[in-house]
Length: 239
Image 1 (cartoon, rainbow, N blue to C red):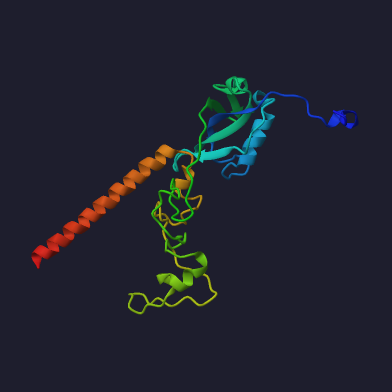
Image 2: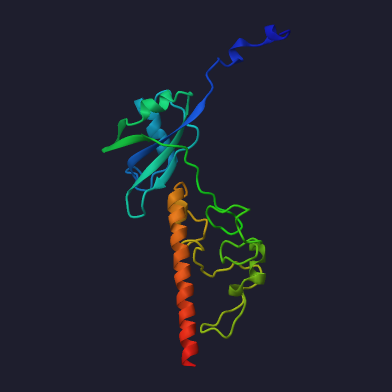
């Protein structure tokens, strides 16, 4: 109080209500931008929101998150978090509102807080945590081997010479990068496990999709094990 007379009034923030977060999603926006002919970005979404009158006095908490619905569809969902008051009056004023983006009619829906599925950096599985993961060491993301990236040439089978293979495999020279190709350890695609090309990454905000996908993967693994056991039993009977 003694120093209150020396305070510059213009530098003091005006009083305001305690802020809360509200969660919204915008649907039916085309995935390909008509301006750049490339997939639309968070910055373009921010500029669309900024110029639209229904978003007056709306402040975004963070960048909009763009989630493609399906790989074969050309539309996606945008998740936005806005600053709101405890009653959620700002979100209520936006929910079920429509606005135009060029020739498309876009809808705003309300949603619950959508926490993304985390990817554990030891095993590169989605939804794993330290207490659940059974991997004791770090897996290298490229070859899925139990070694760090700096020790790849020393421990990985792909960088060691092997004359017994059908196509002669030469040793990777020291200091040279590994040029061998590997599949994603989660989706078996031609990308790394943390790539934004992976379907697991595209559905990182959809926990139900991840759960169903891992259940399907486990079922396929069990079927593969059963078929291998049956084939061994058949071979033993023949011999």
